[in-house]
Length: 146
Ligand code: DQA
Image (cartoon, helix red, strand yellow):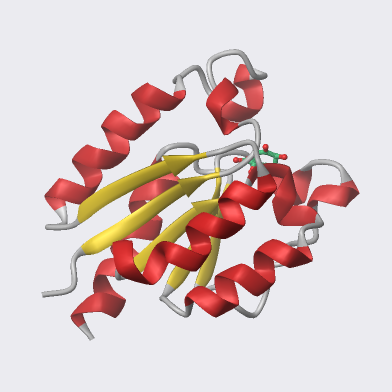
């Protein structure tokens, strides 16, 4: 059964708890991972977490992803808006992907409106806080169930 989901956090997500609570809430990354791990278990999924602030490390992780996970839920942070290298790496990974953002990127600065993952991901969930991770996992559950 395909049930392993990589939950991948990019640049500055390790700073949750110190970032603007109006956009990101007050959970730390550990707290968010506990919540998301619970959502995954409820759906019969196994969440495999990864965070880095190093773009090269993130690309290496995406290259290895097909060995580690059947699908991926990615919050790439600011890389979302400009890292074409990350888009290429996600395309190479070739596993079903959902993009997630805690904040409502479309109602923030214009530079946050573009996502390099457009057209590659099944869905982009934004502005639903930690609940958005549940939405993303539900979507991936459906896809893995075929
Ligand atoms: C974010 C939104 C991005 O614009 C920002 O750079 C982040 C976090 C979010 O989760 O809302 O670091 O991806």
